[in-house]
Image 1: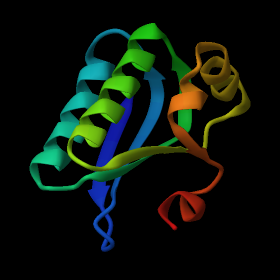
Image 2: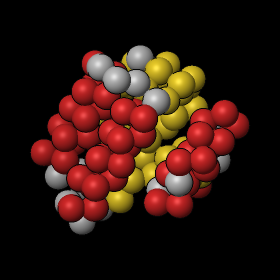
Image 3: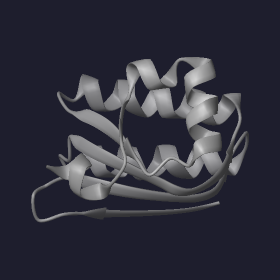
Image 4: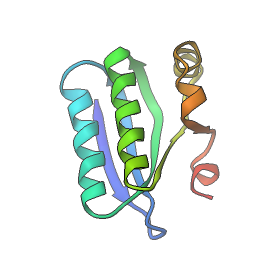
Length: 110
């Protein structure tokens, strides 16, 4: 899995995830990216998951943890670009009821 983090001029943190979000180093890299941006006073995040192929229960737990950390800092976390398979997993697990999901980056950063 690859994780890339950047901050937009608007102050929004964008974290792009590609590959598998599963038990192990993948979840730790996402956690480190979010915590690193929180340390730089970024509070609002968009996770671009358009390249995400697979997520397991550990990955879902990490997404919820990232949402919790963002909310504790007074911010929010949005998901963008979920493919139909990931959307179905999020629907079955209830993730779609606790996280804002958007089709495009423009919608998520508006």
